[in-house]
Figure 1 (tube, rainbow, N blue to C red):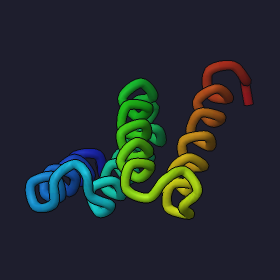
Figure 2 (cartoon, helix red, strand yellow; figure 1 turned 90 degrees about the vertical axis):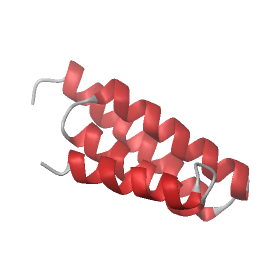
Figure 3 (cartoon, rainbow, N blue to C red; figure 1 turned 180 degrees about the vertical axis):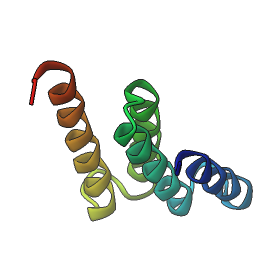
Length: 88
């Protein structure tokens, strides 16, 4: 499973660069997307929010990197809603 590797990657980046770094935010996003994929929606949301907050603080709301994280979060929220409420 990829989740332990994503967690390890995030821990390394946090140690090397701190929490307020674009490289760390990217690792947060990767972990969030992985957690969403495996159905761990509440924890996924926590990491999406942290990644978005970091990029917003670094670049502002209009930056493409911030928009990418916001879009990924919305896509994940939609898939979460669909998984919970629609029988496909």
